[in-house]
Image 1 (tube, one colour):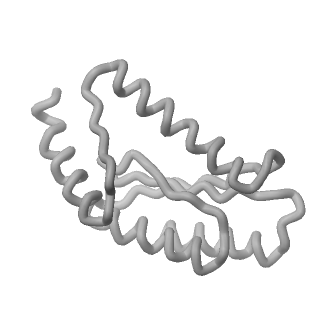
Image 2 (tube, helix red, strand yellow; image 1 turned 180 degrees about the vertical axis):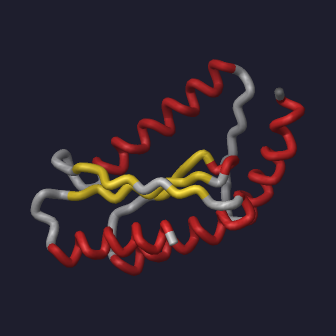
Length: 125
């Protein structure tokens, strides 16, 4: 019910805005939820397109306590940047779950692939 979900939405909203979130959308109607989930699933293809038409996705899946979510996302985004990897982060943050999609190409160097593995290892720790 909306009453049961509302406190969780408030915590997620405060957490996300504290991390610089500029646009938070909460859906209660079925059509709104379907539109948001469609956009979320399109992110996968958008991430792959960042590296070209032949990219395949290495998708992480992490779930952390909601209070730890901001740090986990910030640390993962920092790792992606420091390693020079393409890897947008997103998720359904209300339950502490987030993802990082790291598109891979067939001709990626061993160094690039090791960096992807290291980011994944750090994320799941």
